[in-house]
Image 1 (tube, rainbow, N blue to C red):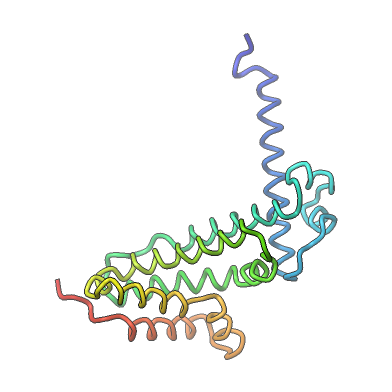
Image 2 (image 1 turned 135 degrees about the horizontal axis):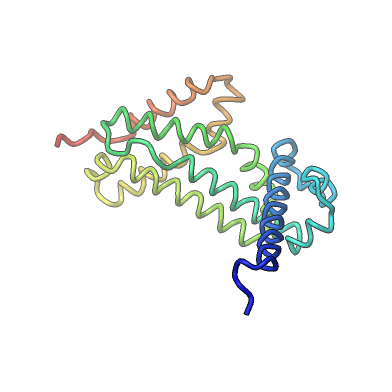
Length: 206
């Protein structure tokens, strides 16, 4: 019987690690190319950027659509990690600042990729579902950050307010502030903070 620590097992584990690393390099190359140009890159461009062969790309992904889905999942995981954490139990001003600055950082980092995905998702059910999941996650985060204020509203008004705030902090809203109007990161955050603060009902006194 072969031991789990046999040379053969070690070789297999090594190959798996190298394959996983190559797969990650391909995903990162795809994302890097989309940051520069929203058009879908070719397999040859991806392979060159990742430092692998075109054959390696298709050994790990059935086609470029599967790669697009994997890159989208990677992007959303990174954005979700950035969104979580921070003070969700603080006072109103602290929660507003924490939520908006984290959301602004996500928009700053991932706006080019979001645009590329929206342009290229086409009729892909997988990518459309991921867009929906991303928006649902944003709404869940809003619910978490402003639970004290939302709790004072009837259910229907809560739902409407969540829709309004989610629309307010959309990627393109951030782009209009930063690109079209030339606001700094801090200035754009301040615009969102003041807008959300005006939308929210008074914080209940504990």
